[in-house]
Amino acid sequence: MITRHLDCVSAERLRRDLYYLCCDPLPFRKVNYTRPGQTRHSLAEAEGYILGELRSTGLEVTKTMHRVQAFRCDSSKPLHHWYSAPAPEDPFYEAANLEAVKPGQSRPEEIIQLISHKDSMSWIDSPGAHDNCSGTVANLELARVLAAIPLRRTVRILFCNEEHTPWTSRFAAEAAAARKDNIIAVLNVDSLDGKSDEDMASGVMTHAIGYSTDAGKQIAAMQRQLAERYTPQLRTSVFHKQRVNDDDGMFIKAGFVNTVMHLGSWPYGDSEYHLVGDTFVRVNIANLAMSTRLILACVLTLDKEGFQFQEPTTA
Image (tube, rainbow, N blue to C red; front, side, top):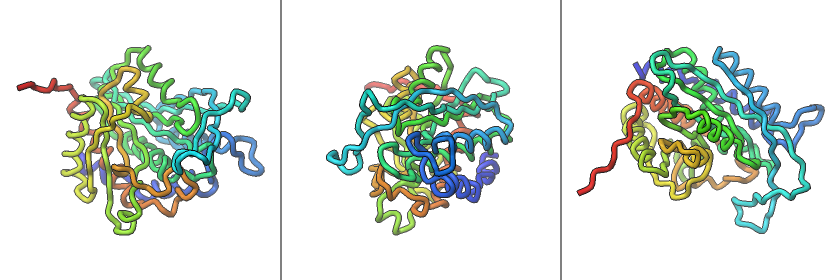
């Protein structure tokens, strides 16, 4: 049954969405760049595209606005980390959290949370193809496929912002905690297919699953087994994220510890990470599609089986 659903993932739709959001017509997705002749900044244009595609699935979609600032650029810092805090006088902009919801039929109170940040780097002019247009279009494709599948549990798909400040995933996580949402698993989808130049040249398809908590470790191990079963073409690894950061970290800090991150590789070796060369032509669409299929298998398995943390046994 799961295999049949995995076949619904469309590499062509992934390619089309990726091209639109990080190449033509949108070179960037950030608040401090507006295309000539346009009245909205490029992140708002991207949000409009994503919102339209989500609504076309028939899913319920919410749009929540937040005030953010662009990071400043400090080229004296290490190459891939030029972002610097904005000054107090720097302008604020409006940016949205978009969230699509597929209600569950028999256990709707149990929630599987998907996340991807949709923005590109605000401190440089980078298309952000791997980071994180890849995760954005993967979650967009998952919304299309899941919309047609009857589910036991509710799936929520959040499109937030992490390359501006503050990170808007924090607001979504804090709101979920305030509502006392029963989130049984959080899957952050970020920088799929991102890998070293050597792996890119060899054509190997890679995927990594990171965890920062004991519960996340158990979810990651389960999802590694799913990779072996459903996507053996992927060289899939599991790694420990020692720092509680990224959008998955915002949910952990809000109390949702059943959390993992799906990433292109680990150690993350993309030579164009946070640089202007993170472009559409460097993305392996076949790898992106295979990673999307793996995440879909993870969601469908969590929907079918749920997740209960098993306390580690001590000798």
